[in-house]
Image (tube, rainbow, N blue to C red; front, side, top):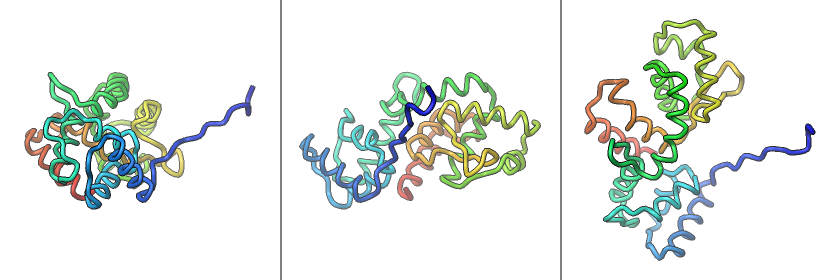
Length: 203
């Protein structure tokens, strides 16, 4: 029955429409925002309606969407990955991450994901990935590993099947760093959190 159905991918909202969504949620939930924080929420969430809604529905104790620093704290709360507690956004990503990392259960696989996540929307060829990370594997082995991550929806192809890129998702990168950056880069947890806060300001 080929050709009977077509797939349609829902893309993130452009900035202006994302801000309209922020104002709509603000009105629905009776939670005030300012013009500045509405623009920040629309930008930092990359126009993803789920992330926008999650901030308004958050049970963060000191929720204040008129305060930029509070919004950053809420994002860290929603993406937290501690042993005893996990934020709602973190829980959403766990299913994908555990599935993929259990299939490719090694440090190099996690390094590859973090490396491409940090590139934002820039594409990297298999050769560039192999050389930049100094990976001791054949290109065929690397291709198989990358394809596993693509099937798990945590990486994507670039313009060709030889090029790869991260999801360009700020919140995914935060969740992934919280889970694995200490293991990958031997970074202190507080250093990781400080680094994440700096990145949020650049989003």
